[in-house]
Image (tube, rainbow, N blue to C red; front, side, top):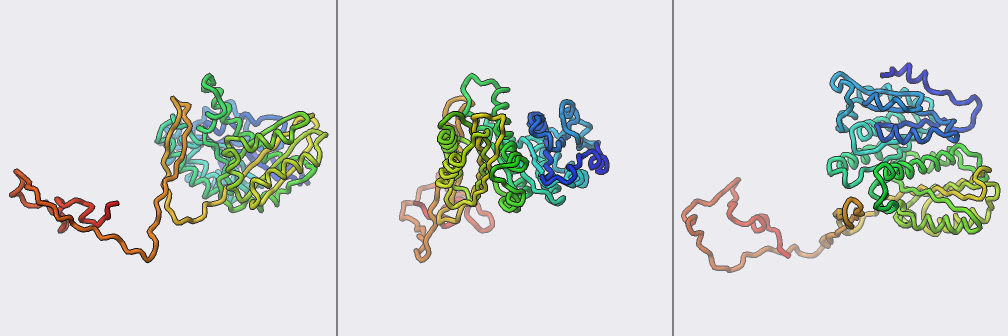
Length: 408
């Protein structure tokens, strides 16, 4: 385990006189470390990598400069055992180490898979430490597949709420949505590769906004103004097209993208970030065409847009969209979410159906439950038995009648 001093010393210093923000990317837990490994590309050369886990064996192939092993005598190097409380306790116990690892960074990216012990337990504590160190904190996380069981799903949802409270923004990918993008012959490895790939595209989109000089520049202060203290859950998509009709094609792909709920996420958002990247042939007309369609979908949202040129892309146009969904406005109905699964096998798509119960209007008298004049039926062998009473209530009387619950 690294001490706060050695952790801080191991971190890279930002280039002297550099105007770019210092971006530090943390891979937390096995899934986060695996996703971080896919970022070891030339385009992320300026980023600072760090990994955190309760299992030291996962660090072996990691390209990270900083490796923080959270462990104590109770775990004996065997990890958190899938228990988020263990991971959280370890992170809080070594909070100063995590905070030291975040010092000097302007932006902290947290990559994790929620549902297990390390990613679910450590990520919210790391986000809190990063914010106390003064960084803008964005978390990129995946939620488990339905087939992984109720326990992992419940742990993931609890961690997601904690993470949204601690980070400035959370980009969340429910893995179940990937079933819309694969076929029945896709292997397990291919499925997880697709899931991680979508999340990494979100990282790449924000990274381009922060680091690439653009025709239309997005400044770090703009990103802070959009995300700071929002604690929002975000939807995102990455699309690309090439050829003469590429602007029209990317718009169609955005509006049909399953991770944006076929465009509904844009309509429900109050803040949208759009990043366009293309070769030297990128025109202002193409930028205007894409942004005009995006604005039509989210006319009430605050929009931040950036456009950059990358000569290596030639005739390709890439667009990254991140939409922060607004909180649902209070309504006159109470909603209860019910989860259903449609389709056969593990490929079923989870649907959330909101069943609404109308609230009672003021001024309308509450119905009174009256006893019907029915003939009393003998209790048979129990006719001479004393009534069953508890706290002065006759438990032989139906509950709905004792509590005055009206029957519809």
